[in-house]
Image (cartoon, rainbow, N blue to C red; front, side):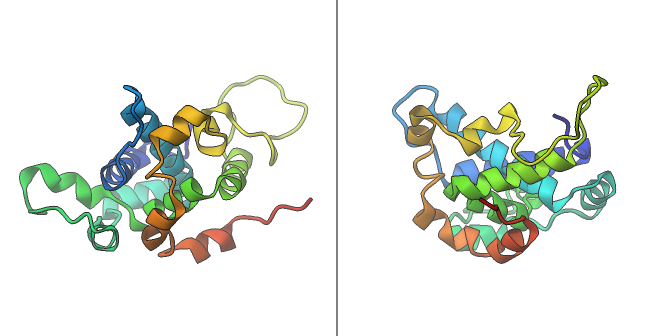
Length: 187
């Protein structure tokens, strides 16, 4: 599945990096860091595609910049020792709304499924095979399985990253806008 634009790549990478630094992997499994990062990246990708649904939106954020991580750092208590240090430049590409929405998705699998449904219905299929019908809600792409249906190994690796109480200071920042944007499930 291709997103609206590759211009979102720096935002997705930086926002994912912020999440995994603020809520590090917790599993004893050697792959815990990778599993936690995969889940964070899936949540951030869905959130970014919801926030910037068109190529024009993505290009505009790439030109103007997303705003940075200062508020998130303060809310999560993960402020860097020296935010002007050379290796902290990635923080300027963190999008506060995207991270807040990703935190909401990580904390609530049902909300994550609704968000993935919305993205799946909106993002065009890249192959040219004829389809009997357009992609619709419920056609959950397998690319987001770790977000929407994590297995026990995923949950163990991302215990901090998925803990609703720990995520709340970040998730509450923009949760209302996400809930307004996503359609409610019927039945």
